[in-house]
Amino acid sequence: MSLVMAFATENFAVISGDFRRTHIDDENIYYDDTLKVFSINPGVLGGFTGDCDVSKYLIHELKSISDKATVEAVSRFIKKKLKCITRKDMHQTVILTGASDSGKMAILKITHRDGFKVGKIIVKPNEIKWLYAFPSVDPGEYIDEYYDQITDCNYKTISELAEKVNKKASETDNCVSSGCKIISILNK
Image 1: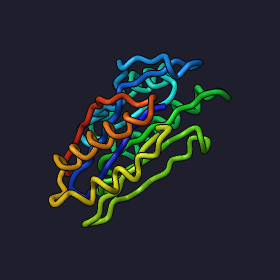
Image 2: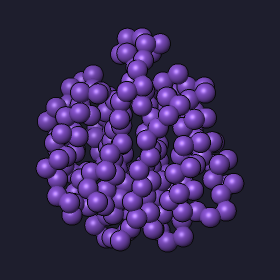
Image 3: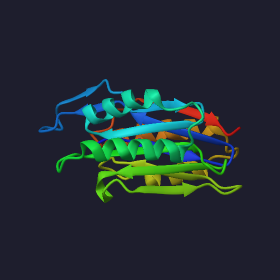
Image 4: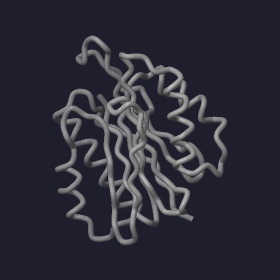
């Protein structure tokens, strides 16, 4: 399990990911050495959970993606790559956030749980959206609690929120490390 969270408003996007890599047969054997979130290009951020080898393959393949690719273009690229390597036991989820074809910020999810269909959330003016994958403990209530305490919603305060949520989730979920990497982008 992992904790990758994406947050987006019309002005910015933030993504965070813990570092925990657990042994496939024994979740009590783990290492906090795995980077799960990346800047794919100047307008798109990505987070990967599941099979480490599949994540590494996708990250390597994404080096060829255009600096101008939108979040939808990146999702199509990833979906095509995943369909080529799909096997019955593969568990993989990718969360993307960034500038969409329309210029608005969006969050997209591609997961084995629904045959790698792309789920998409477009962010409307004056709202924030978030999406997360896949800890054993649902972090939704922590996000709600910490978000209610924010008086100025900006990429710094949402980055701080992500760090707090990750830390809180790690206290009750052995598959989430206490530390995380957080990346943000502004909508141009």
